[in-house]
Length: 299
Image (cartoon, rainbow, N blue to C red; front, side, top):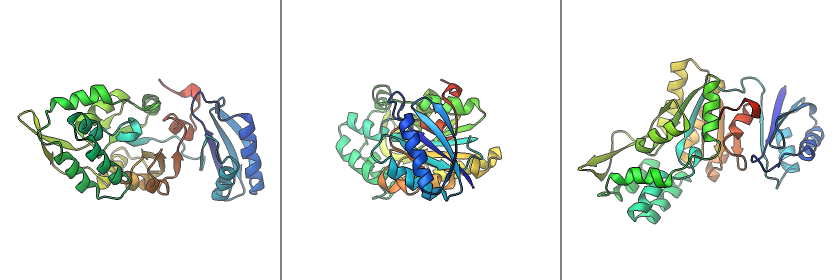
């Protein structure tokens, strides 16, 4: 059976040199693989190594051991259906660098309390819905104007986010931003990054102030998976042609349901649920994983 192993580093860091590509090839050979072609996706940033005649886990583990300690992400997959037709992405700490609710709470003066609950919920230590309600309750009476201030002053796209979305969209993919956070932020982040659709929770607002309550059904782990599956059905996209990306415990169901589930600098509980984990590359690494070359990127 044929596989492709992809080595990815941070753009500009020159981490994926000829030396490390050669070491990966030797590691695959020692694992019993027959190594075929090496294809550079971006000089000193990303390379594909094709191999077969060995179980992928054995080849992967051999390369991981060989390159241990290097700032290089490693992915192994079948070459078929690499370029995905559907991207469903988490927002907080994935597409953006922040947790919006934490930033809002910080401006409101209750940042430490909210951030602690966020961290525990994302690590899978607390029920997501209960923790979300508790965090929002702490914001009761906060001016709704603080929402826009939070977005303007605190929220930033992670490097590579816009390139990821625009490149996939230009190649015909459907893109959606889903979040256990709030639509006030997902709508703006989706527009900034170029996502085709967005989802999230709704703050209840009365008299220009947050009431501390959430309107409607809470968007959590189940809703994220449901969004993925609904878009698959709507656009007749098979599971193997889908990509989901996230970092927290509430992303696990959609990561498992997607053809390719990618965890970006994830909480420990998320690592085992993902097909690929990215600890070093920026979000353009998701394009390299799909086999895109640097000259195919759309900025």
